[in-house]
Length: 205
Length: 150
Image 1 (cartoon, helix red, strand yellow):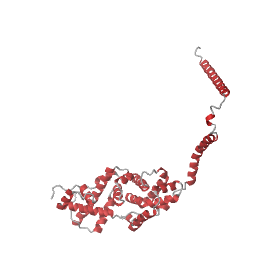
Image 2: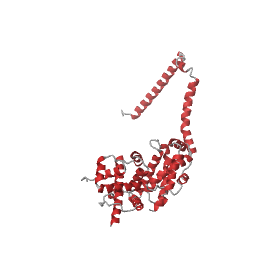
Image 3: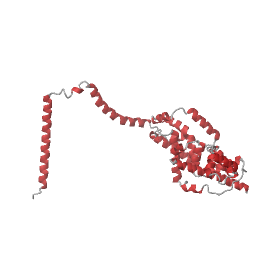
Image 4: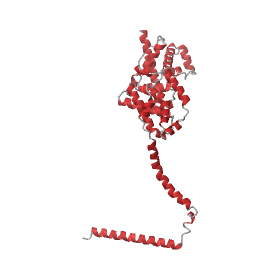
């Protein structure tokens, strides 16, 4: 779990507060400024959206160096195509979509993600036992199990449970049908539960 | 205890707090220890998912990105000017004379003398006549060149 070193709870909660307090400019205002050549406005857009982009990139890309290149690539694409942004969604959702697609392209290029990965999830037959693992240890097990999930499932779990996004918003980002999103989320939660049960069983033995 | 256990989906929804009102699920959970344990595990999983530490880039994204961005202001202005200027020029060339001669605009046709119209018609008919004659002669020459009779 080397990449967890980059994770900072305090920094993120501060970022959330800053995002709400400082971001008085509307998407339209910021996009307008960028289109008039104001690069500082684009810096503001980066600051407003980098938390969400990080959530997606960290869940989909394991290699730290690649994350750096991908983050740069995402925002360069956003800058290049910002004139094509039609305000059909929030600017953050649009950038999250670019982030998701950029990561997906990277994974496909590196052959790191295959749809077949889903098939191996959630099929272990495990007996249920009473809670034996302390909460802290359980948390580590769950975080480890989340990391073992395929990139797309990890991202869906994060967007739905951590970012409190609706199915419609996730659909805008991933282009997956709502039914597929629900199904993937169901399977991911089931896989996590079964992973935890497997640990309970090991502890029992 | 009920014979049939809860479906995984029902357990997930209950653990997420979306299905608390369903009497069947509540009744079943009150009597089925197995399902109760499963729901408890789902609740623990969801709590840990929700408490996941959030990801933060350990580098300054804005600085990194801005180094790769070229200011496009001048290019944009030039591009916009290049596309707007010809259109603006055409609009000016049409609207300015229309504005200047707006009082005479409706008398353009009625103000023309009969002699001028007659002379214009004669000139047009003459030009059309000579053009037609020239076309006909050219056609005859081309037919002769083909020389079908020999």
